[in-house]
Image (tube, rainbow, N blue to C red; front, side, top):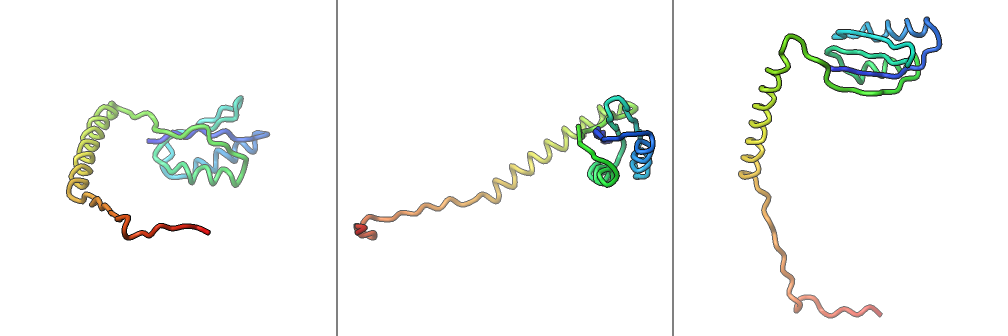
Length: 122
């Protein structure tokens, strides 16, 4: 679930209606609200924010205010945090194992002073 807040320049109700229609056509939009006072459009749901902003920019001037995770429903948020914690631990363990197995070799070069003659720039 994602939440996108975009500031749009809309001058009348026709442009407002057009912006709402453009965004509402995307698949996965959960809710759509418009603050006429601040000209902010808030979109939440399972959608691609990049596609929404690109489509809006074709019809009006848009500025991204914030993009982030939206609120989860029905207490699923706690379960998601537990699963994310487990996944993070698994990923950390895999990274440690990978680094231990595929460690980068350290190569040292030693140049003796006898090999390099004294250079004098004339």
